[in-house]
Length: 141
Ligand SMILES: [Zn+2]
Image (cartoon, rainbow, N blue to C red):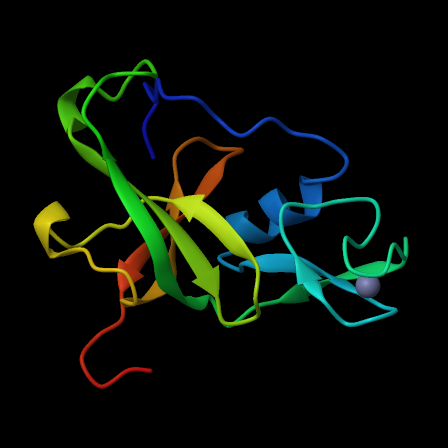
């Protein structure tokens, strides 16, 4: 945790509060439709599959697969200048939803679509913990 964290932070809203609260506790949660069972992220007031407003928050395994990735070679956001080029990955969780994040613990040139990854929680301020990803260890599925 840094007193001088100067990158953009998640914006708190009633919709994403459960996600951010869980991240602070080291859990990756998504919404699950109580009508059709589809898991979704980001939070939404209705299910995109069946339009039901009934949803609950569920813990995920925190595991997923790199679905796509790219590298940022320009500084679009304050605070990233020391990390250029940095990766941005789209991870498909085993539960289905996809989320954008960064992959840590691996060189950019070694990132591949299909890599198995797990959530890694990075507390950047007292309020904000970011969900990032790390490669699964050898032998883990
Ligand atoms: Zn549904």
